[in-house]
Image 1 (cartoon, rainbow, N blue to C red):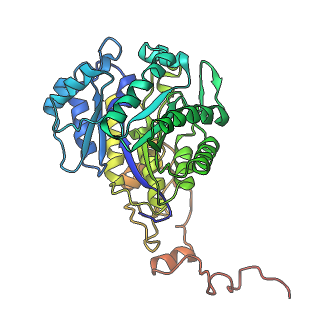
Image 2 (image 1 turned 180 degrees about the vertical axis):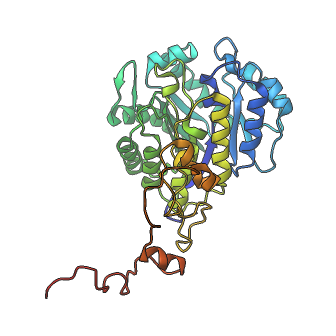
Image 3 (image 1 turned 30 degrees about the vertical axis):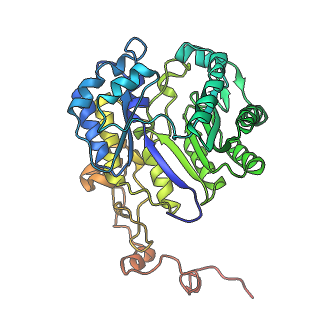
Length: 403
């Protein structure tokens, strides 16, 4: 991983965040096949689903069958959402392969900034969430905790109450921080949550900079963002740029960017950051993800077959930025054939992975094959542009000043 950026822990949420908004009748064998394929991609953290009441989330009604049939991959951490003790007890029946963890291991104070959303989502109020804070602190003191976390969900805004400013978010953190300070426990972790797609890179940057200025000991961060307004991947980028190598950052997303919550008002349009888009971005930033992007794209196409529709991601449609073979990038997709016919449909676009058969029979309007001196150089292993050399700057056809 590049020393410029924080250590990233990425969690794939498709089997939970994605499937929870889809048809409850999706075949369990299809989900198992998808989960097995995800395990082969190099992703290290995968959420398999939720142990919750099927009354509220009918899509998770067959979790026991899924857990008994899927094939865990060594080296992959599998987790599941459990919102109460009953859910935790159900999950424990499948540990291993499940890793039973609740949060980061640091006691944390958190609540939803949107009281309306939490009432719709968990049938509790923000006030009830806050009522639990003294118990969290008491347990932390009893356990001898040295570090703790603060944070909020709906950190950036709400479809039901509108925008929440960075000042408002910081005010909530300050109250939480004061409680931990009073207990003699250092705050080292900050979480930002975004169930309704209000995340914005500018706000993410502001929050990180202001927290770092006020509490420099905060080095553990998490950002869970939805993509209703197309800001999730750019917000991932903002967090990566604002944090440094002394920090660690937990990010979430789903293959294809599918997902959403029936309680937030945006349904399937809520989405999440497409995992393949975030992985592609991180790799090109010099952050080693350990993920086989080719296999990851295959899981997106598999999910689209299962769901019967196109998903929201971009890299799964257009492919990774192709490599010219001398750029040092470890990408299987090579530069396109300059004599390919018209590529117009999404099916033809899959040539980046399927080869020329994807656009076979396409319109070819050129009377002669296309040729380029730049491509000739590339074929010889030479740079397309020489930064400190003569090509193309001293060629006869390159415009030059008169003096």
